[in-house]
Amino acid sequence: MVKVFKINLNKYEGLAEREARWKKRREILVISGFLVVLGLMSLYAFRNHQALGDIIDAKEERIADIETRLTELASSGKNIAKNDVLTLARMEKDRFLWATKLKALGDILPDEVALTMLDYNYRELRIKAISKILADEKEFDKVSQFMDMLKTTPFFYREFSNIRFSESHRIRIEDQDILSLIITCQIEKSPSTSQSGSNRTSG
Image (cartoon, rainbow, N blue to C red; front, side):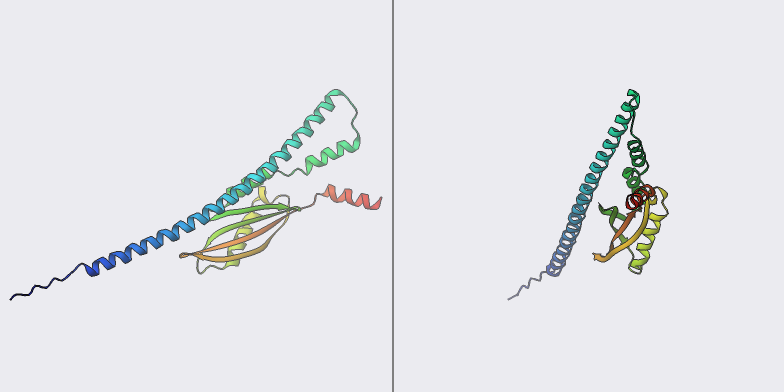
């Protein structure tokens, strides 16, 4: 009597295929998670940028309204008080054009750096950004390079009295190191404001 044995040669091949399939699924899940996080951060940055743009538009509209009123008063031939003229001149001198600064900031940012937050409060602008960083690269060198880039850009650094480092965090996503950093830019006080403040004190 002849016995017949059946050997499944595809058993181990099927196991390898399943492992490869699971590995690919895990990679897709990790990449999808990273893209979702990046998308949420981009949406948050966009909303902050939009809110800042609304503030800029409102201030520019107010300045345009003051200039229109000044023109109407000049054309009507009415006398204008000296204090009003000095106030308008001081406002024009101290006017801060955020649109120019934000455009300059966008022009100098390298491809591997992305802004995640812009926050302005009490004459200070806080810039939060993320950047790729090499495994053997030091955090301080990356932060120093970013700050030097801001300080050597006249259209951005003008009107700022100080740009200082606030904090940084290094995280690793997949095989890539990411550096999260916060830089604080302080707006200098205008000479006219300091002078008027000293006059009030002496009076």
